[in-house]
Image (tube, helix red, strand yellow):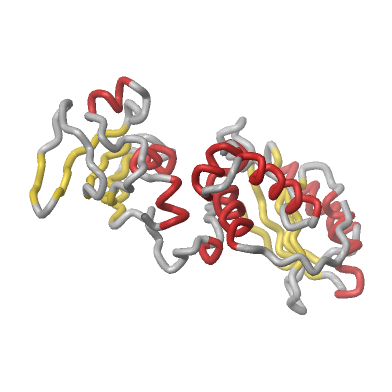
Length: 259
């Protein structure tokens, strides 16, 4: 969809809404965003619609782990194209079967990045041939192992603070991780015992709190131990999706306001 040039300027509410959407995606409801931004749900819906119409929000994409979705391979092609043909060639590359992302860069060389997914190396070689047939020079290519996303911190009024970042992270063998982090004030687990959190699904069965520091005291966790705001917890996660498990100790409001 083409978007015309606009003089639209983001205000603080727009920036906060964008921050939440980048952090949580479309699984976040307008009501939840409204509570965070301290406006009505109708205002949030109207703002999102306006941001979409202005072309500031360009769409919503599911981030898919293609290796888990059938053992597929993801490959990044770093390409060179003539600058006058860059946009046209980007659109033609996007039409190749298996291509999931195309990015144009302002640089003189390596100014086109193409990401494609295939069942095997033959599929990826087919994409290489099609790119070459279009007149796109492939300078380098690599299999993508992983990809990470973060919201744009300056859209957070307290952007200088990374409130939900773990203080320490240790990767163990066997897909296990130990993470130390502070519990945010509106985190789902606050004021719940560990037993309650597990029974209600707030904590996954592969996540274990193995240490708590509170007011300079070391607490040995038990089932009836209640988690408090600002506790520093040490968490053992045996799941491959550790980031999702840590959501129990984070809070949406604190991400926006720093409270």
